[in-house]
Length: 133
Image (cartoon, rainbow, N blue to C red):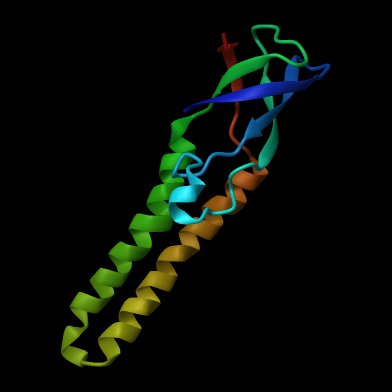
């Protein structure tokens, strides 16, 4: 995954502190849907600086896509899959099917919370890969 960022500071260990403009899924076209509140937010992160970028440079950064893809699977796919499995397997129980499906959904969220804690302890590694021209 690649994004644009602005170098805010150079750190002594060969890394750089960056400011990244947060983008929403709708690409910031808020007048179409009323907005989601994420447009205009700035994230601060550190990245490896193998190209020697300096303060004020606008650069491209890269990170592993696996972190985002696993998060998407755990947050969206697993709870839905467990809800459908619980619901469909318990349809004979009538009104209890929805409760069992909901329990499956909630159980499916547990791995997502655990993965979130893991990512917070060991954040993804970002690398500056080039300058924006």
